[in-house]
Image (cartoon, rainbow, N blue to C red):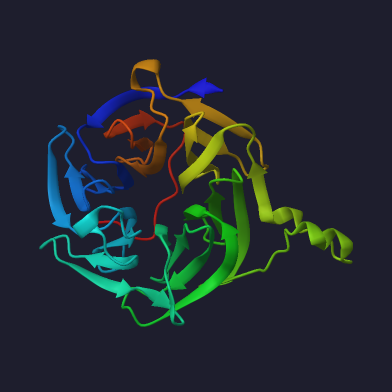
Amino acid sequence: MTELREVQVVGDGLAFPEGPVAMRDGSVLVAEIGGGTVARVEPDGTVERIAMVRGGPNGAAIGPDGALYVCNNGGFRGEMRIEPCIQRVDLATGESAVLYRNCDGVALGAPNDIVFDETGGFYFTDHINLGGLYYATPDGSAIRRIVGDRPHPNGVGLSPDGTVLYWAETPTRQVQRRRVVAPGEITPADCDIRALFRPSGIDRYAVLAGLPGCHELDSLAIDSAGSVLVGTLVDSGVSEIRVDGSWTLHTLPEPLADPMVTNVCFGGPDLTTLYITCSRSGRLLRATWHCPGAPLAFTA
């Protein structure tokens, strides 16, 4: 265990922030689950609500058209609640449109996190009890389920070369991985204990790491070394899980400690600034990471 370096408060007073997206102008977009809004946090700490999407906006990412794509879990607050969906937000106007509410006639449960690949399609997680992972196109024309019946899938990301898909599972405290063989196509894996009785046995590659104790995993980002950085709840901080499965918990300084460190993303001119959402305290923090983050497919 070690402490994060050069940690500072970027923005405060946010309504359960998640899904940070670092912009080229130095600002950071965050989804506010508690307000049903998307906010822009400027480098000087100014907060501007730029879109009302209602429900519970969670993970977010810039798409190939420069718009913001949002996983909306639906929310739980009376008139603010909407059907869980994937939304496209026009950053110039703040207008939002629903792209997907279901897949093959089955309603989405609680879309959580999202990452685009270089072809312009995106993977996203569904955080319901036995949720899954999906692949979809940003024009709203195609969606398919690629992984099913996993326990509360949360953060999702791609390796720096785009050949490995990672996702975190909150209650199992595991980071799973699958090889990408084509856009939206991944290798299957058998992690069920019943696989022990089959000739092939359990696929040990499928689980990158499983963390002990109360390291409940939330959303993630990937650095240029290929390590998976996961916002970690309860025993909170940022868990760095390296490609060999070894890991380190990086904690916040005591004055800024928060039991709900949920999401992380990379930004800054050299991608060594790590932005961190602290959802209980309503803060966006920044820290200095020891290597650059892996560049995302699209930025704005």
